Length: 503
Image (spheres, rainbow, N blue to C red):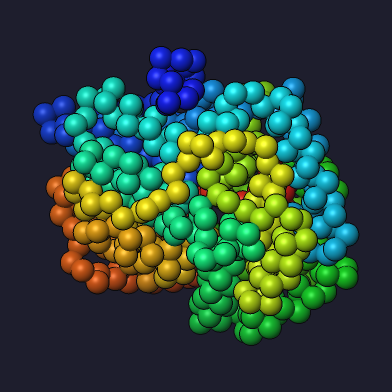
C-alpha cells in the first residue's frame, strides 16, 4: 500500500507498506477488518498474522478479515537500512548481551556511535519519518482503504503505544481497540518530571521491576511444583549462586546447529532468563537449562538445552530476505519517539541506580535503547508527545498481566487512567501479554466478546490463571508453543537474541 513519506506533504514522495489479509471465514457475518500489531517496535505484523490468524478464536475469524502490516521503516515495508549487508549491521553490535562492567560500557558507547553514524550517513529519508505517529497515520489510511468507518485494532506490547497514539490522533474513528502488554505512553515518550534528561526510556517504563517480580513468581511456582520443576528446592538461592559463579567462571557451550563454541556469561544468564520469562509455557525448559548450568554438564548438552529455548521462543526461524533490518528497526522507532539523555555519563549513572533500585535486571533494561543517545533522526517534528487523554468514540480495552517481565501491570493501569471511558482487564498470571498467548479462557472470552460485540468486562475484572506453568498438564506440542510465543518472538529485546545466538 502506498503512503506518503511525509504526511505533511501527502502528494510528495510515496513509500510502501507491506500488508497481508486473511479474509473472514463467514462472508455473511463479516463486520470489517481487524488490524494487528505484535510490538517490537519493529515486529512484523505480516509474519505474526501468518503465524496466528488461522488459530485465533472462531468468532474473530468469522467476523473479521485479519490484517497484518509491517510498520514503515521495518521489514518488508520501505525499510531503514544503514549498511550494505546484514553482516555489516551485525558487526557493529557489541560482543555481549548488555554492558555490566565499566569497560563493557565503553564498548557499548563505541558500538552505539558506529550504528548511529552509519544510519546518519546511509539511512536515507525514511530515517526521519519513523515515529509511531507516522505509523498511526499510515494505519488510518489503511483503515480507509479497507473500507472500515472505524478502526478495529489489536496491539501487543509496543503495539499498545501505536494503539494509544491512534486513539489520541483519531479519537472519532475508534470502533474497538485492544491494547495488551501496555506501556505507559508518558514513560515511553518524555518520562515524568525531569526523567527525559536523567533516565533512559528502558528504565522509565519499569521493565526491570516487571522482570524481577516475574522471576520471583518463577521461583515460587517452581518450588511449589516439586519434582515437576527441576530447580525446585530453594530455587531463588540456587539461581543466585549460579549467577555469582558465572560472573567469574563462564560456562562453555557448543551450538548444536552451527557447531560454534562460546561461553555463557553472567550477562547471558540474565538475558536468557528475561527471554524465557516472556513465555511461561517454556518455564520448565528454563528450569532444566538452569539445572544443567548448575551441574556443569558438557558444552554439547548445554548447547542442546539452550537451543530448545531459542526454538520455543521462535528465534531460530530462517530469515526470509538477505537483509532484514533487525538491527535498525528498533532504534529507528524508539529513538524517534522517546526523549533520552544525550550525555553518556548519565546513562552510566542511570544503570548504577537501576541496579540498586531494581536488582539484577536493572542494567539490561537501562541499556536497551542506548543508541538513542547519539541517534541522528529528526523525526521529532512528526512524533506525538501527548496529551494522552482524548475521549474516543468507543471505549478502549486495556489488558495487563500482574507478572509481565517487559510491560509491568502499572503501565496498563496508567494507560487506563489516562484514556477516558477505557476499561482495565487484569490477568493475575505470568508472561508477556495475555490474550491468546496465555491460553486463559477468561481473558480470551472477554477480549473476543469486546472485539466482536463491543461488550466490556465488568469494572475491576481480574482473570485468575488456570493451574501452573509447571506440571504434566502444561505439556504442549512444539507447534502449540510456537503459536503462543509468536508475539513474544518479535518483542524480546536484542540482548536476548544475542545471548541465545539468534540472528
